[in-house]
Image 1: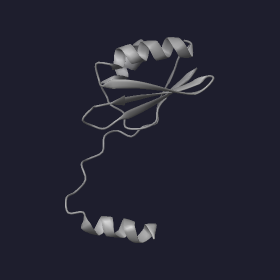
Image 2: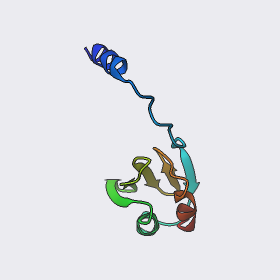
Image 3: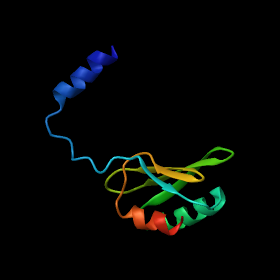
Length: 100
């Protein structure tokens, strides 16, 4: 059933989809604590879009940067790694680097 629905949606699409931005998978390393990273990144990325934090586990948080034209960007904070897991907004790179 899902296959039929997907085929119908593809058949009805008339416009080409917008060009995708850089894919996720960009990883940074940090020596800071989870709380320090969350505070710094939330502050620095607020200029890019609205930042929402979702606390997953004891030592893991997902930041979602939304309300940006390219679509939301998700960032997994699991020190020492910081990974952009969805659309990577290039202007976020320098801001993330300031928080490492």
